[in-house]
Image 1 (spheres, rainbow, N blue to C red):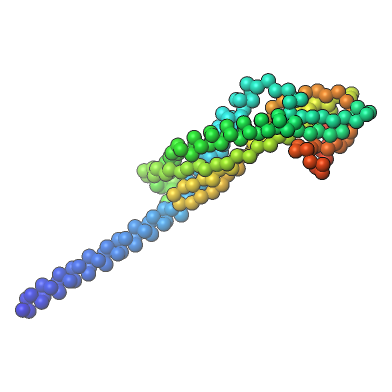
Image 2 (cartoon, helix red, strand yellow; image 1 turned 180 degrees about the vertical axis):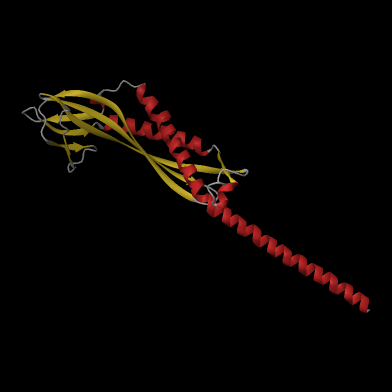
Length: 234
């Protein structure tokens, strides 16, 4: 009986030791994962934001810039320029039909392109040496493959700019302003990056005396900020 009791105690002791060793090993693994996460998270976010900015610029270039280059657009299709009886430019209003057409097409093309990027897996390789915190070892060790997904939205609007182009002449340039917001999702964190681009889509010379200030009325509203006319470059 005594021998059997000893054997049972030995078995129970072995199980207890194994359980404690397993708990310690698990704690070390979790602590190591947390340490690696804290060390490489800033680098991952930088890489993810850089990739996201590149994606946003590609989406704008593919969806808008290339398309605009194919269109022969007239300023009159986009803007209605009002003059008073003395031939001074009094106000600039967007042509609703032209405005809606450009905005609708630009938004849809950018959203479609961003959707394509969302369905693609973007993998960044980060050296394990970054977890050491040492600049000497930062590029050493195997690379950890990290997949992140950019989730984006786009906003566009038209912005007319005026500049003097001679006596009683003004250059009217219409810019398409594009703002793309990308939410970067990585395994350990999330961040947001914003990319804005200004694309000239049409310009023309307008005959007429230009005041120092005029009303820029993008949506036909009666109360809008005044826009200063840029002087002619010398």
